Amino acid sequence: MSDGRSFVADLDARQRAMLAEMGVRVWAPKAVAPVEPADLGERAQPAASEDPAHAAARPEPVRVAPPVQPAPVAPAPARPSVTVPAVDVALRPQGIDQMDWDGLRAAVAGCQACALHRGRTNTVFGTGDVSADWMVVGEAPGENEDLQGEPFVGAAGQLLDRMLQAVGRSRQGQGAQGVYIANVLKCRPPANRNPQPPEIAQCEPFLVRQVAMLRPRLILAMGRFAVQTLLGSTEPIGRLRGTVHHYQGVPVVVTYHPAYLLRNPIDKRKAWADLCLAMDIGGTPLRR
Ligand code: SF4
Image (cartoon, rainbow, N blue to C red):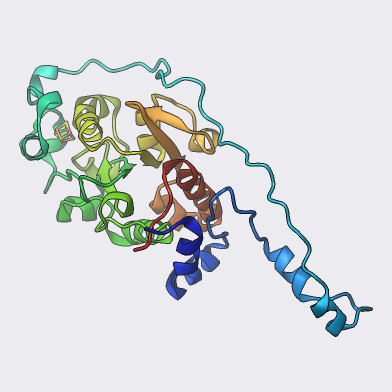
């Protein structure tokens, strides 16, 4: 196990290149004063009127870490009032809240509780280590996910993997180095249309059970529908970012979906800030 500083030192060239490409800073624990590029430039360049030899001999100025600012926390975990559509709960498998992993996976595979089961190739249950202490929640399977039965594949999945790698985690990792990835909806909406409220209401108990069994330290909610489902909110992501929310008692950090980031790379910097917030509240990165 290593602390955040050694993690930063452990970033390989590929990770640093990716972060440089995103134009973002490397995360460091809050107790460590951030070293801004401007500071580095200031130290490296002695004043024009100053003898460089004297500048080299001059002691380094003492830098004082700025006071730590706690991440804002949403005032109450209670879900705002959002109309929950009426659904026929009798169509759902019974006893979801008592199922183990194998039972839950089998229940999802055979679920016909909403019309989405008719068009699916595969259900997309989730992937990753069930002892991982981070959980990523997306919205619904797309075409590739439906074909492969795995969440976050294709270009968006690759970007998610790079984002997770930059904070020392992966879907292959375990415990504090891992992440479990699931969607709100387990079946693909046709033609990648938006999930409908009755579909979300019918499918959410599976996600609730996954969260209850995982008991993660942190949920990273990605994309509008995942965010709005978990938070019971109709607010846009831009208004929900930067604050620690809760779902089933678990801290939630909100960020953009990787597919959105591929279309809007200017917002990668915001996504990195969200990951830094997640690191601040969700644990110290560990050596891979
Ligand atoms: S989307 Fe969820 S509720 Fe609908 S059929 Fe698939 S598993 Fe069942």
